[in-house]
Image 1 (cartoon, chains in turn green, blue):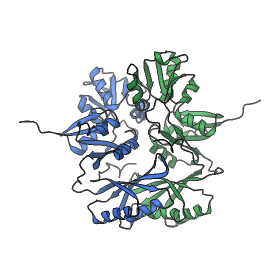
Image 2 (cartoon, rainbow over the protein chains, first blue to last red; image 1 turned 90 degrees about the horizontal axis):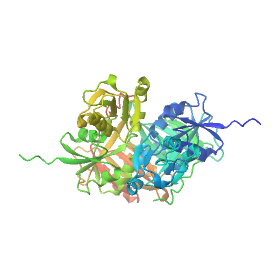
Image 3 (cartoon, one colour; image 1 turned 135 degrees about the vertical axis):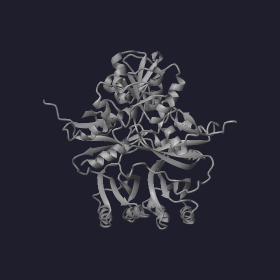
Image 4 (cartoon, rainbow over the protein chains, first blue to last red; image 1 turned 120 degrees about the horizontal axis):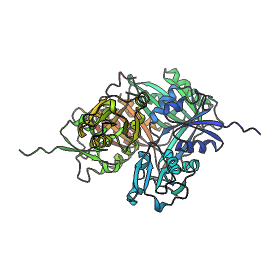
Length: 285
Length: 285
């Protein structure tokens, strides 16, 4: 029996990174993970023939430059076909057979280390060691097989590299999430799509945003998120990124988009997809 | 002659960090820089009696969690009294007397290293070494007095630690800026204030944002920036952060705010201050 061809999903980071965890959460275990070192390499992965889909972080501190994701998405011909939100849970991971009592140094990306201040305050005998990334630190610790070393990373890294989970939830703030967008060269709208992302370019005049929101407001289409970004080289013009509770297959949404365009607004639909649940957002502080 | 008491300005990071550079850019050399290791320590600096003013990053990838700045600003009684935008220029800095030809390793924060991909591609004989932060790397390199080591940081770090500037503009993308807000316990509006920041809490109903923008739109008050953030624990409510080209001393702005409040919207003015110029934004790509 020949192996089934698995969907190849590119993400930014090492094998076992939070991004890989997000890909598995959204698409299941039966994917071929395609790690990419930079955002540029990530967005080139489909053109390079290395991947079928791209998963790009779009909202969060830990994931780094999210604006870069938006910029590269705009430059591409890709469409948003899905999204996933994962909690950023920091775990202490050692080599196989390691015990917490023997750990003397902990390595990770400095942003991850900084999100575990309380853990280091409570364990002053443990030295902090900065490293290039979270999952890569687990790889190094497991390979060294040194029981005095451990790494901070997502749970997926322990699975991928065969590390020992020593402590869970080292993060100071449990309400830390990263949102990822699934991007495809194929613009097919998934069944059950209920969220629409678009970008509008508006002249910098009083009331222009208010006017551009009206076609949605008067049709009772709910706005989920809005963000403005200045357009480099065009000092008084802005791009507005909107997420709406809507599907382009709904006639009133089509009418709203037509109306916007009739008024001369430049509108680009970035994708229509199934909205993700934000785990625990309702109950967290 | 007794020395004049200088204004103490707290910022997040080491002495010589980009934040210190921003403080000097905004307030001049005659300040006492108060470095703080974390955002929490930064926002506590005035209550602790260690600082008179706080300079907090509010927009950019490099500066880390900007959402954290907003959250801590909301929890505080501080008011925005100024802003400054600085370009993030990456410099190669060595120990005194160092030469570029002898450099074999370059250390810095991984985010800074990642923004200089082209430099490392062009100089494959130079090893990348991750470190806790940019300015601290310069301090280490200068103290070690090892001509084979250099660091990537802002120019200010070379001044503060007495390093040798070996190369300028290592960053891949020149259009990288960080915006900082100057925060004060004293809500006095500065002369010439032309920018207003506020936060509104809106119910998640279709058209609620559009309705909340109307008091500004109909008075021809220009919107400079907008960003929505979900309110943790209140699943369908959002905070909208707005920057407007306006002064609260202008009667029409007062009327717009009164009108908003009359409709039951929760509005908090975060500050009214002199807008910063974004250097080079007009001409950059």
